[in-house]
Image (tube, rainbow, N blue to C red):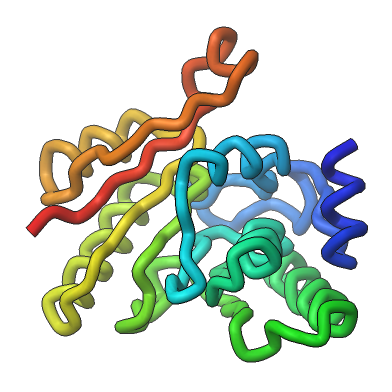
Length: 204
């Protein structure tokens, strides 16, 4: 029900299944699956995003998170998607969203590239991961983020949905990121402990 409500509100189409966009060429990248709107509602009851933030969603699919964040928080958002079919769907959604809202054209961007090829912008300060790829790719991206912070120091946070143990072990054992908060999804978490968000903050 919420999938239909929010898609209609934003004037977009983000529903889809794991086989949409064809099979990925690399075993390092996982199939398309948008974050449920009900999960986003729960996350943002506990986690604040400000209009001055610039959020990067790696493996953004059709852009669901991007439009949600822009609509409710007026934040700048970047979607990075390697699959051309999904990328074009995100761009099409952007046109529909901006056309209805009459705003957001300068604050919503999508890039079609491998996640590790995205060049971290000095304004990027929030990074979202719905377990989109292997730990090898995740390590590269986190290292790119850390290099970016060396050039332009700023507050950095990572938001992990359905976090893999590999991601957690890497962040907590080999980086300066520290767990800031955990948001569990009611009714789902008790059946599946992966149904949660972990928010990590870079400590200096």
